[in-house]
Length: 194
Image (cartoon, rainbow, N blue to C red; front, side):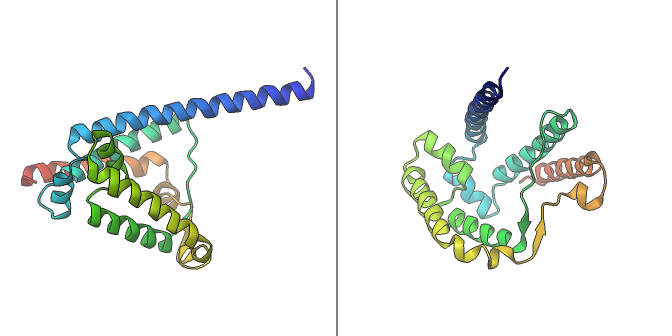
């Protein structure tokens, strides 16, 4: 096989894998939205109840998702099916991102995931305020990014660390206790009647 034919074959393989990954993403997104809906997390009243600390449905869903996600991701990593690409971070990134997220969440009563689920349900507040807020917020951040990237986004830079790499242990040594802790918190929330 000639060199140019190998390049074309490799390019076609990469393009088909990229398309396959997009379909996987779409499929998992639909399942995620369906599960958010079934769990009640796309309802404004449920999210407002979480923000007022009187309804812990959203916390239960997120903790369950974190535990099952850790099990799935680290099992696939252990089997060599996936390679994790850890995004580096900083305190500044987390503070700015959490602030933007928190303001949007408090004003509208949805997070980006629940907005998508609520849009799928046809909720007008999510369609108008949520989609507009995401587009406007993204546009403002894109405009401000050149000024932010060497300023607040670099403050407290800690790189691409994970708990296992920070502790210098096998992934499962950090993952198993985290999952046990999450399960204990979930049982405590249920027992407390939240």
